[in-house]
Length: 62
Image 1 (cartoon, rainbow, N blue to C red):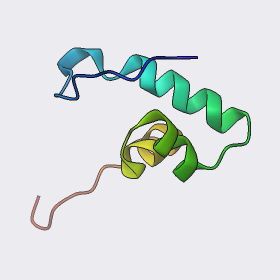
Image 2: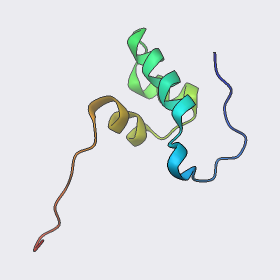
Image 3: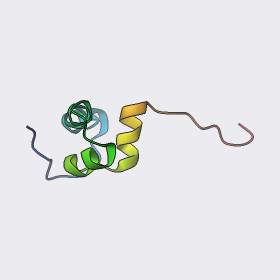
Image 4: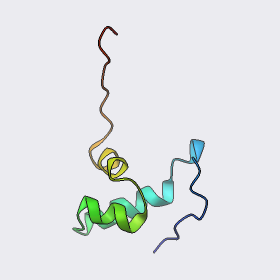
C-alpha cells in the first residue's frame, strides 16, 4: 500500500504526498477519518484539512 516515512520532520514543498493519497484512498473505501489518520500516521486535524479543505480564519483586527 504505502510506506510510512521514518523521518517525520517537516517536508517543505513535498507536502506529504504519499500520506495524503493513502489517507484519501482509505476514506474513499469507507474508513473513518480518525482511523485513516491513525493508520497513515498523521494528525487528525491534518486529515480533516485534507478531506474538507483548508478554511481561512481571520484574526480580529485584520
